[in-house]
Length: 109
Image 1 (tube, rainbow, N blue to C red):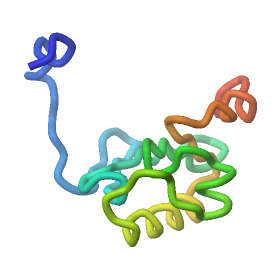
Image 2: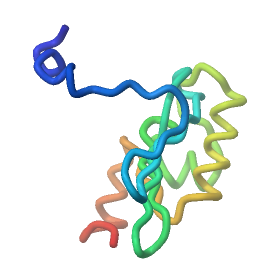
Image 3: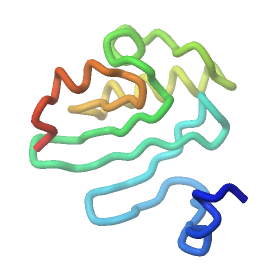
């Protein structure tokens, strides 16, 4: 087991499906990028922020234009996930989009 995960493994809870993690924070299975890919819905005062992980690499291309990212295991699940993220997210935060720092220089409230 890698050094980073090994010491913390007893505190890791593997999720199978959608799950409420804390009040206002939910993990949602999207699939697409990988079979069990999940995004996080975080309810904030200004709406719903979605930590999109790898379901989208860039908001302007993947979410707004609904163009799938470069790597996925299921195009059908990817397109469904992109549609869901676009529909549900007031703030979409992909893992690889540096433009979010310009869009939210002070964070999301």
